[in-house]
Image (cartoon, rainbow, N blue to C red; front, side, top):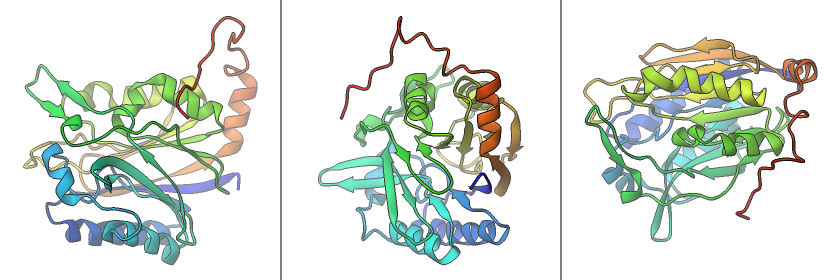
Length: 277
């Protein structure tokens, strides 16, 4: 499939998990009715973005209610679904994990956030994800009839090596559920997605929650889709909405043919090596 529609669901996140699941399910259905073949939810779509709360909302695959909803929604709507991310419990550890489902409801794969957001910004915002989360160690590329999908989460996009490794593994569309804040968002959100798209000549999709000024962590919003030439082809505002864009895989091949950055890498001089299994 060389062309298809993607939908990004920018939703308000509430404290009540069930309320978030109902809203996410409604938005997935609305996106499917508009012809989306790929639907994307935001980072931590089932709970507030507060590190100390993540263990309370954590679920294990496959019995967690959020995970069951995602699988059922993908099957009932017949879409590929990148389920944003949610707190995943695996034994004694909790991860920030994105689960990806096929149109028949099968789990295609998952990505555990590799780079944890531990920062103290000059604005006064302090976040320490490592206080409750463990870090993943896998470069995630999901084969599908829509083409290979790279998946990473929020802070991961700031590490260009990871983005390049996904593209070298075949990703032509990279999906990033993310929750940039009101310091990093205005400064870097659009810029970094356009930079990564240009450098890797791939589509980059950023899926943010909607902005809630009363939340303990206020997100920037502005979910977006950037094409491999660096054009922003669709962008949300700060509130709750669904944005749509057409993915054209032929455009990727045309741009890579005309400006062959990946072929022009000097691998005789430098190399990017994957060390983890």
